[in-house]
Length: 250
Image (cartoon, rainbow, N blue to C red):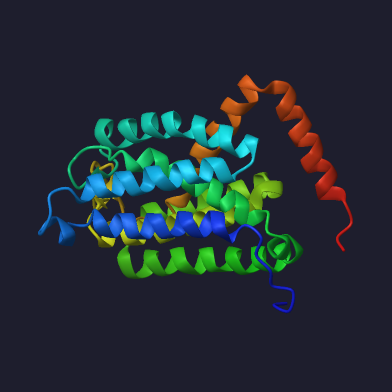
């Protein structure tokens, strides 16, 4: 399986992984003990990588990244500040967060484009599918993470409902696990012990294990916005994806 391991787009998504991990560490509670401008450093680093990825990605991906920033900003303001679903360290929405959403989207997209990933996608899907269930079940058992488990169940339903996008969203799920574990461990944001800090009958871990399902809404919103403003291009894109899906694997 690994004999043909070759990565064409690693320069794109590795930059995304790196800046998210490094940026969250710089914006951490630990670093805040020594400097007051850690968040500003992270904002700058993420903005630089965002611009770099814009120039390295395709036109369609570039448009989705541009559209994704205001969509993510509205979502973050609504969920964090408006509804209190989670709270950032400085009780704001850091500038790097909406940009980070776009970086995550582009990173996952280019992982799915890797020839090695496409060739072995069924094996990868089976492995990730099983891992999701095990991961969220362990959080449910050992951290009473009912909210995260509910999100995982929703994710499994969406995988079944939209099988053509299963690989993308499985990878997105674990990308969210990656950033949520780092972000909460570093104290960049915190999830309350119950859902929305209101529903005592739905306890939650920090972070909820299956919260990646919430990111699916962001991805769907970006695609909807692209479809609305680029209807003809969207139809061509879907025809191309359909033709590629039925093409024989070599």
